[in-house]
Image (cartoon, rainbow, N blue to C red):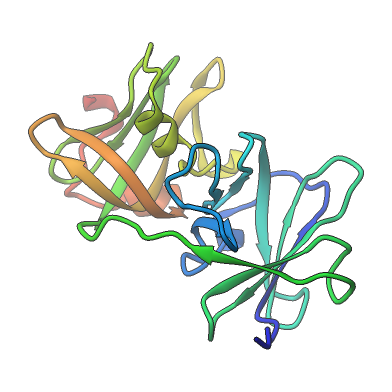
Length: 220
């Protein structure tokens, strides 16, 4: 199999970035190596808009850089070691280069299936108090996590929640606050609960502020 370069993932030490630097949604998702099983405990590598979660639970902040690589690059922090992941759009394959991009091994990784019932929801993404995360759209307030949650479903949801740049995040003190985002989600309407996140895209605060269908943060 030939793997033309489309996106290159490079491990670098970088801070948080604005929404224009989000990982493209067609790269976000769960990935496993050849021969691995998607639903095996700890198997998938999870890429969200702003983070990469390794199979062992480690998390690195990431950002997308369109001017790097052939058609763009994703950079993320990894202590003292560079690992490269190359996305192949034509094959929808993620290729891991252990020795560095263009050198040594090229190990394909494959996308895990996602729920078929994802829907797009946009609005306020809020962390008002410890352990509590909400998505507040035009329909209702959806719970992503609640204080005291300790289960695999909630962990999987929170693995895909994007981090916000300070300029596009309203701080309410002690690291809490809210931003604006679009998520593709699977939900339980009876419980007002987000069961899974597929992809995410951070939006400027002004987008939610100008949306008359959204409740004002003062009314939450």
